[in-house]
Image (tube, rainbow, N blue to C red; front, side, top):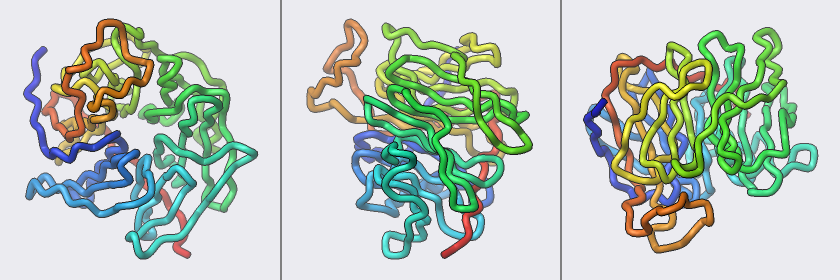
Length: 297
């Protein structure tokens, strides 16, 4: 199936990531992890406003009492502006550095993040009472996260392993355990990266080097592909008034000829990699993301 893909913003993001749609405001936040920037995109005006410059930001979530919960390479911040913020967690959790590579707000208002070290990555949960815990560890490179519509399953990607994992989630306590492989992406296709989950429980995963977003059914079988005119598709998020528009981030990383060592066989170095924000109109609806509920300091 062919889809009309619209380019919304050309920011030359090194690693565009972390798109989050805010239904109350009808706007989208998205980040450039390695560029130390993030933006507020308003589809009503078409304006993509840069609102942060500095920290390497993996992603954000709206914090209901005010501001944003922001996951960085040094920890988690409660952010209202670059001149008004405070640390929620900084440094390490149980010996694991909080160098976050992707984040998501949990149904209970907590914050979940995965790290990116390429050696000993972990998934963290930051609780509202100030506690922080390691949910799982020993991963290669933590990426996209999501929840099933019934909230009984948590998903996350290990890009190095080329796998999307599913964990059981206790809907009463929010505890996450029992990791298993949900779906795999062949290295010849690309690397699984950021993701989102739609209202029917299907997982949409951006495939870095693949120039596409793949939709997997609840059993982990590929259902469709949406091609994007940039090889390094990095994440996806549903937005729009009816949550039937897929916003897709892309990354320019490597456009100077730099190799990661993870390129699929036959990958053309001259291929356009990305750095832009795209949107695709679909016949599928997403579901709203959750907000964090951390008390203001």
